Amino acid sequence: MQQLMEMDLAAVAGIRSEQVNWRFKGLPSSTFGRTVGEVADERLDLFADEFVGPLVVLDEDALAHNLTTMAAWCEGHGVRLAPHGKTTMAPQLFQRQAEHGAWGITAANASQVRVYRAFGVSRVLLANQLLDPAALRWLVTELDSDPRFEFSCWADSEAGVALMSETLQELQPGRPVDVLVELGAPGGRTGARDLETALAVARAVDQSPVLRLAGAAGYEGALAHDASTSSQAVIDGYLADLRTLVLRLADAGMLDELDSAIVTAGGSAYFDQVAATLAQPWPLPVTPVLRSGAYITHDDGFYRGISPFARIEGVQPFRPALRAWAQVTSRPQRDLALLTIGKRDASFDEGLPEPQLLRRRDGAVAPLTQATVTALNDQHAFLKLGPEATVRVGDWVGLGLSHPCTVFDKWQLIPVVRGTTVVDLIRTYF
Image 1 (cartoon, rainbow, N blue to C red):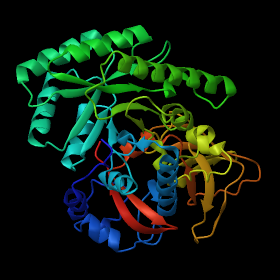
Image 2: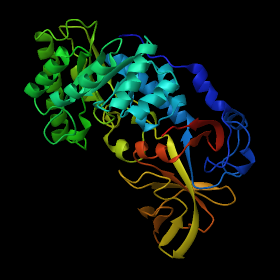
Image 3: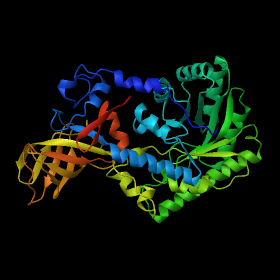
Image 4: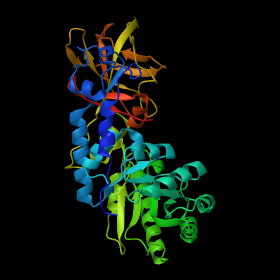
């Protein structure tokens, strides 16, 4: 279980052969008919080569920094990383995560797993129960056709275990499906609400002829939403319970047949606490796995305020890699401008876009002060202006974005830039 994940590099490289056309918003019309690879290699300029706004881009230097920073931190703290792929749904970025030591990729539903498998991802954690007979039928085909494919899903109820077992027994898989018993907490999301319930679920998995108990899983991020001392105490208490669950599973002999039990938690907000608890010495072979996904781009909002690296001394913080550019299309009042960006283009669920830069029509760029986005419509942003703001119709505004998980799904092809030069294009599959 210690080897790193693999991918079908030829399939990922094949993305560069896809033809660019009108489906990909923001791209210059002059690129239509050429391939993704050809356009990426042309080194176009965002403002000189007829890109149209609004446009969301990724900063190459920030991406590289975040990838290397997280890889080094995980290695230094004795944890594996199976980043949540739902953040980007971008196989090109999955490949870069694999190149930086990713142990696997996490999914939220069966459709995401199918995308991963189309690009040969060899190890997947499905952070959910898998009860749909159609999805289970597809999964059995994948497992039977590829002995290198490792898959684990969650279970948090005996009813769910019974449904999985009933379907799988009809399908007669060539090998059992690995399951991690999920521990939750009152007020959380999914997961058994106490240790005794979790143990009962684990026993049901252990007794199923078509399932194999592979360890335990949890998600601490639903239990707190800030970096306060009280929130961190809640997280520590939950993680202690998760550790206790694994030890009780081992004491009951339910993990004896494993080379190494998986124990996994960790979003992008409290992964330092997860590592501190789950990477402590164990009396049995254990693979502790983080599932942080948003680290690869970080953000200018929610994660900026709650990321562990913002409060740990001696660690370089992640850098925000996402930026949106939108044009000022109207200034109907002295204290108001409208931008050509809205809910169809940018995240808004964990904070509104943050105005950062002002680019004049002559190319001059300066920090944008006395400006705040106060609301988004479908295709407009309301920019509140202070009395000294010099924003003009036709100017471009560079915006920081919060919560990357709800940005990527709005863009099928995202330019990667150094400065204003495009150095790559990232394809997403939502």
